[in-house]
Length: 133
Image (cartoon, one colour):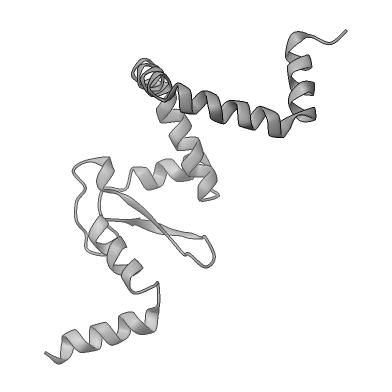
C-alpha cells in the first residue's frame, strides 16, 4: 500500500496540467498570504538562505563551494583594485560564451566589460581612443 506522500506524487504525475492550474489559481487568490509567509520564513531562516544562495551560485557557475568561497573572499576588484567594503559590491565575472568564471570585479568594471560585449577588439579600440586624447 502506497503512503499518502507517494499517492500524492502519483496523482501529480498523472494530472500535471490540472495540478499546475490549481497551483496558479491558489497563488493568485493567496498572493498576499504567500508573500507574508515567505518573508516570515526568510526572517527565521537567514542561515539556511545563505547556504541555499551559495549552493545556487556555485551550481550556476559550475564551481565547488570552496572555489566559490575563494571568489567571495576576494578583497578587491581584479581590474581596478577597488577594495570592497561590503560583499554586495562583488560581481562574479564570467564569459557569456563559455560560462567560465574569470574572477571578481566591482560593479563598474563588470558593467564596463558587459557594455563592450566581452569583445577584446572593441575594448582595444576604446583604449586606443582614450590614449589618442
